[in-house]
Length: 97
Image 1 (tube, rainbow, N blue to C red):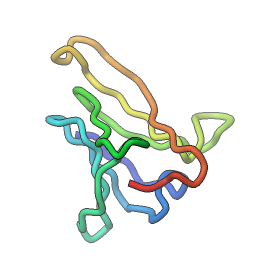
Image 2: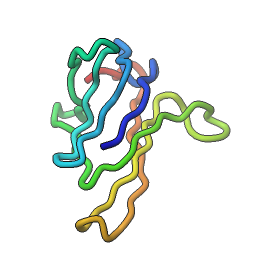
Image 3: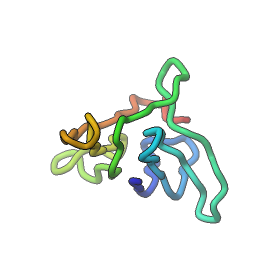
Image 4: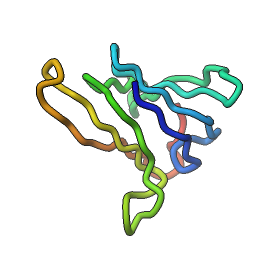
């Protein structure tokens, strides 16, 4: 399971915590008091699922480690025999779940 603090560049209403589910690869948003806010979806409204999802982290500085609208992830694909590093990026005002 991965987790990361929410980023204002990624959501219109900022969640406090994102939690990645290892089993189904979905990324879910929660408030600080544990209220479920929703799951990440793509532009077509389909849930974003990352096979073997391990960890999540937002960029904090575009010149060093990515912008606040970039959610980086690691995953262990092919039954955890291979590693994957990737990112999910929100463009402009589309930041919502």
